[in-house]
Length: 139
Image 1 (tube, rainbow, N blue to C red):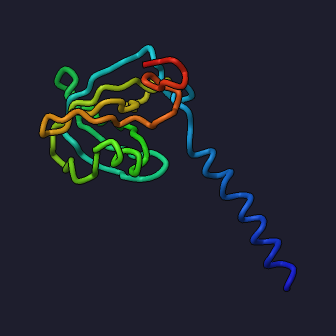
Image 2 (cartoon, rainbow, N blue to C red):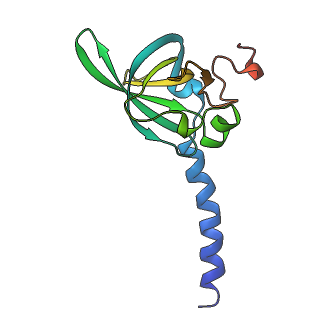
């Protein structure tokens, strides 16, 4: 019994970092940097979670309302850039500039968010390789 606890602890220590790595992805793996889009819609849901935050907008596309998921950076990274959860509330109208998901789903990478008070904030994941990431020469 005394041997099982150290082995189990070591196994958990090896598995947890791997599961977190699968949850995080680069920009290019999921989004198309050549397909920029601007969405204007009403905020319906907020998920202020790691490693990516998500917020959802109801967007009117030619009379049909479509719910879009907007992926942003981690809550800590967003707050360091001046974008806090308290800046938005359900029902607010947001303008989101970003890039479409490669799989054609209603998901965008939220690069810039115009808040209800008119401020523009960066919603992007820093250093993810997408447009604006100075490490790969894109600005």
